[in-house]
Image (cartoon, rainbow, N blue to C red):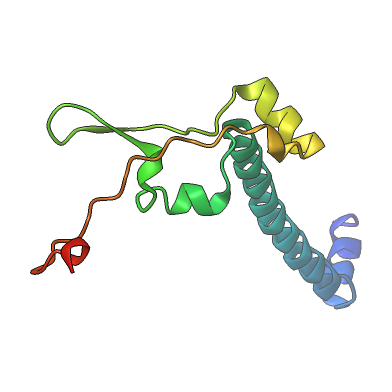
Length: 120
């Protein structure tokens, strides 16, 4: 019983309770922030390895040059800027964006007009 009395006195003083609770909240906040930062770092490292920006990855459905069309309606994701892991990382670290070949874009389809503009 003698060992239980100092512990009970420590719990009833109120000095350590709020301090421990505050440290617990701060630790929980730091863990949540660190998990988010590690996820962001991993996502950006993958984007560097694939030579894509976050915008290109999020909007890849909008950019027609990221898709190869197969038979029928099938299509496959294709990155014309990907030069392999090593070159992508070196290009990112050295910012050598002038070394990219311009992708050959297919011509855009002409809009149908009631009157042919070329004949006016």
